[in-house]
Picture 1 (cartoon, one colour):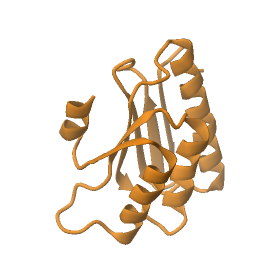
Picture 2 (picture 1 turned 30 degrees about the horizontal axis):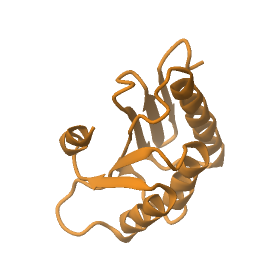
Picture 3 (picture 1 turned 90 degrees about the horizontal axis):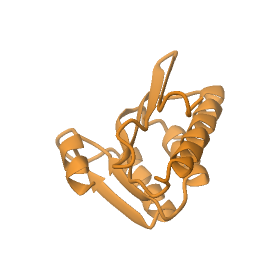
Picture 4 (picture 1 turned 90 degrees about the vertical axis):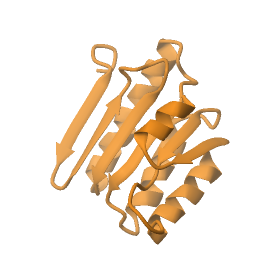
Length: 138
């Protein structure tokens, strides 16, 4: 699937995600909106695994991953599960750039928890608040 097309987009009831390897090897963009149910989360993990294999096959296994969490539904179960999915698929050597929150004020508790999970899973985590900041780090 990934070999033919370097972009996967899926949409469901109140959620969507996109895994875009088009700018590879510079970076990989993962964007999630809404909250996925269990089946969608499993499909997401499968798609991430395929994306990782594609990256390795094309010599970009260390490309930075920009994970855009700005529209992700911050329910009590979705962020920890989402972050564990990333950790189970990608190598700890990857550089993960997280776009965590682009609203004014303090981030919600769940976003703060997300950042802690990300830092525990990856050695190289940068937290930014806009796509422009993320691209400046690539």
